[in-house]
View 1 (tube, rainbow, N blue to C red):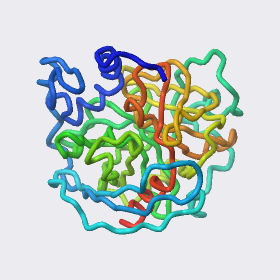
View 2: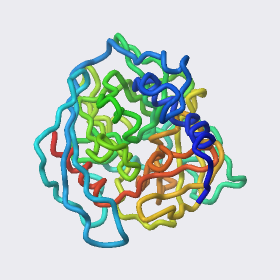
View 3: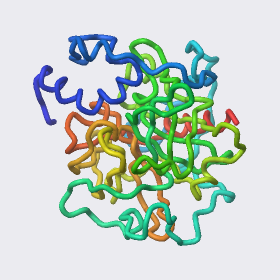
Length: 356
């Protein structure tokens, strides 16, 4: 489906992948090779000098036993920024049967729109298919944020997107694995920061840095697109506040969602200071990949959430995917993909939770 020559496909794939690769140091790995990068791109350097104590880890869980064919359960490695990635001991994580729900302590806001984002924010409207099917800018979302390079205690440029999740510890962010791990050089993007609600240069909830990164071994070893999901355990320097509390509650993690679901997708294009959003019905590309058709999701939107069942009062919903997976999220801005959120993703979430 959507066949193309290898050369044209690599050329298109660079559009979305390059932004994340620049921060990860991927642009220096294979000039003219598998990613078709130019010599100038290959000379781009990875950010350095930020926080350097991030834990990295990996877990192997049993394969899911129900539903359509699913990817095998992931090995998870946990990582700490600045540390040399090493394989952790394998462990088996318990698997939720359907979804991971919000902790009672992470209740959604009481129906009021955060004044930082404006009462006309489309994210607080009832869900319906966008017309036309083109992403539009919005003023920001408390739970959705941009992932930046981080150097000498300051954010640099944003290159990916992420989402605050509901969890017992209230400290989890979900994004795409290709945003934080370079499987070709076996290195993590340690010097990064997450800024929820970022818009117009404003950081209404502050800057959060990862203490731990959880990525499937299948992504780390082979770049398997069925495991292009990562969880970050984040904290804020000098504060004991939990990120989920700071933003008014986290999104619920949805496991084994329907393939065709009315879904809102959000993300931060790397060349703008506001997120974009679009709503459409998803569909199955395969049993392990989900497709979302809407124009306007270019570089930088990788890791942005697929959100279903969004409450128009609170703006909170259920994360059923992130931009990534097949073609690292899509060769063009018009079609986005996500790894299917099976029990494999639940195992990664459980490992991130267990670290607290």
